[in-house]
Amino acid sequence: MTDTTRTVLIALGVSLLVVVLVPILVCAGGMATGMSDMNSMMGNTAGMGHMGGMTSGSMPWVMGSVVLLVLVAGIVSLVAGLRRR
View 1 (tube, rainbow, N blue to C red):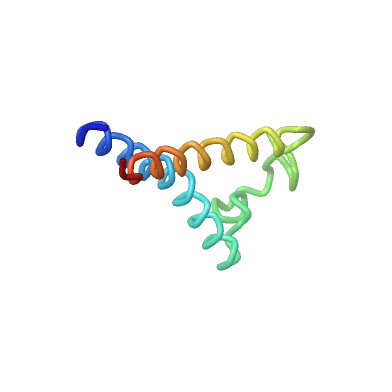
View 2: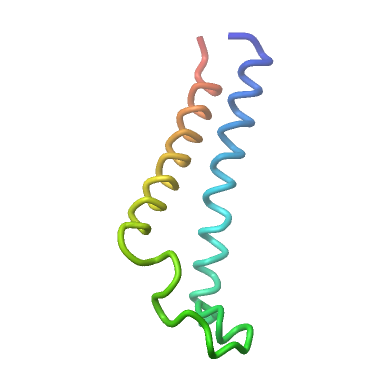
């Protein structure tokens, strides 16, 4: 494996991990400080309700699967770039 290929795989792996982990940490930090409700943060009381929008039905499972898939792809490309042959 050439150095360029290794560099690209490592960069791809790190970027995929950052794309997934940073928003999760930001959301967790917002929930920890009690700012989990966007309507109360914006001062809007006529929003879509507590569980409205895209959180109904099977959407959480689909989004969770996409996040898990991106996380696994990032780990796989990072490991492939760091592995020595």
